[in-house]
Image 1: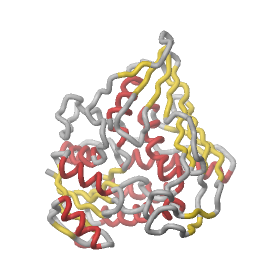
Image 2 (image 1 turned 60 degrees about the horizontal axis):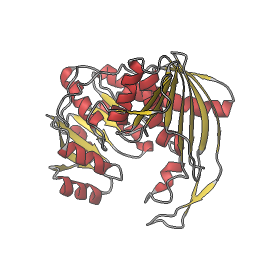
Image 3 (image 1 turned 135 degrees about the vertical axis):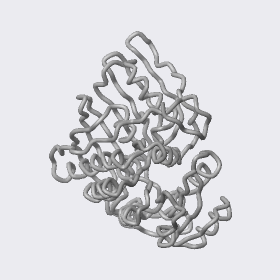
Image 4 (image 1 turned 90 degrees about the vertical axis):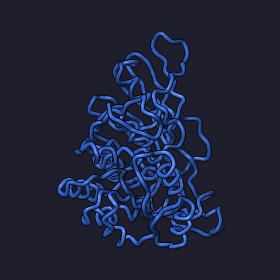
Length: 367
């Protein structure tokens, strides 16, 4: 069993603690750390975590095999680097880093030290996207020629207790939510080779509508509407729109269009369905049975798979290389909007490692 130390006990940590302590049987959360010691104490008490440590203590603890980095985006790169330099494998919430150069440095460092680097999201390992990948791989809709993906809302200041980082460098709709959509598209359509985009922001300042900071103003430092195109090595072209400037919309989460049919892919920020398919012979879309048991919120499956990969000495599915590819695509879209030109993509994602579909829920095993 792999021992995990968790850095960051904030908003997203609850579902990780829940699943890593009650669902996935090949890992154990041994320790947690947070700048706010009260948060760490609360998490340790709720989830029966043995040790409350500082980050320094965690990195020097010989019992910890993998650090789970759940800090805010600005801290991802420095903490990831410290972990790797200390000889610890690390799995981080998205994005891998704030820049492609930083992410590339981390991937190279992990390779040089023979360590594992993993990166969220792992939602693509859930039943919805995995079923979609299998349908495409089986040729159900023929050769993919295009896709569309829309993530549009009016931002997070109405509900999040500390929303300022969503509008700071490393935030915005693309870096916050784009990884779910781009990762799903990459796993379904393969390596991206070029991107182009137009970007804008509707507001220079936003007002917090949630407690405890209700009424406070915050500056908007990033573009909040990004309309982009992604060209894949296969020739398929995806349209991707991410926005914090839209109140309501009726656009699909993801659709993939092939030479023989079309596929409706569920929200890539979730794990379940429905998955709907319509071939050239179908008058209407029909629902396709899901192929794996991870239909509910299974965040942490990427951590569990990384633990299994470390044991089997193979690539992990939610790998640093995949996170780096997604990061380069996002940075390329922002650059394209500023420079008004197409941006080439140099990186490539790691291959997907098939997992058995008949393993008991909570236990992963490879084909």
